[in-house]
Image (cartoon, rainbow, N blue to C red; front, side, top):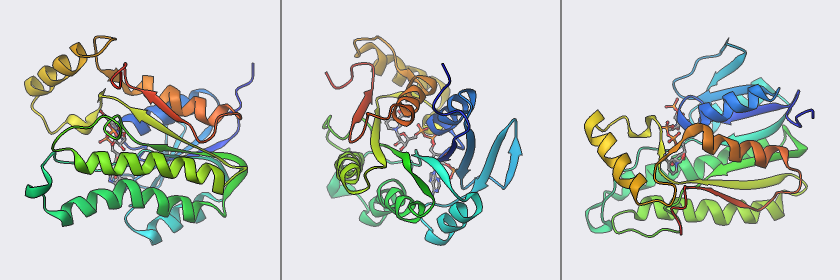
Length: 234
Ligand SMILES: NC(=O)c1ccc[n+]([C@@H]2O[C@H](COP(=O)([O-])OP(=O)(O)OC[C@H]3O[C@@H](n4cnc5c(N)ncnc54)[C@H](OP(=O)(O)O)[C@@H]3O)[C@@H](O)[C@H]2O)c1
């Protein structure tokens, strides 16, 4: 069967690392022309993947990205900040706002600027996280960002139709997001988080990438939140 991604142009904002990089690999393997975007990337091509620099906190940078790429079919947004877990009483709210600015406002900024270039038969896939519906003390930033992202995904699926809009909600996934932890600490954290799950382990970026591919390829999925969390929300 020919993949519906064959010959389609996919922009992955946040494609420079982790889940976004895995989505880029999966979409490329299914015949898409993928453009990766992130702050650490320069304009160029490597192994069939095109890359472009973008900072999602800067509207002019996003505008340049969409002007450079031109018409495209699917927008994938996986950019996310590194968030420190803290109780509200101890949180610097400017830092918290910066976190919202990358993941929530960055997504809205990107969607607004992408619309003139995004094919009407195309899709937008956003990223939330299990901390959005799984409540935990000290996690109000992630919970606020992710819950808002899921609400907006549904709202925008109505507002931007016939374009489809979906949200992928990962559980704990082994990506460079945890590179700040020492190796031993990281392994212990993954072992503990994994053992609490029905599947007995944390996830891999490729397993989450499959959810974005489904959201892009299946023309009957819109306004959905796709949980890929090893049963973390059960
Ligand atoms: N890993 C998990 O356990 C997990 C769980 C739940 C939800 N998630 C969500 O999944 C998404 C991807 O996470 P990941 O685990 O793949 O993390 P990651 O490997 O750290 O990737 C984060 C990405 O965000 C991009 N980014 C950060 N600030 C940016 C900015 N200002 N402008 C443009 N891009 C920016 C980074 O690119 P540059 O540095 O090149 O800018 C990078 O590509 C995030 O939204 C995260 O919250 C992850």
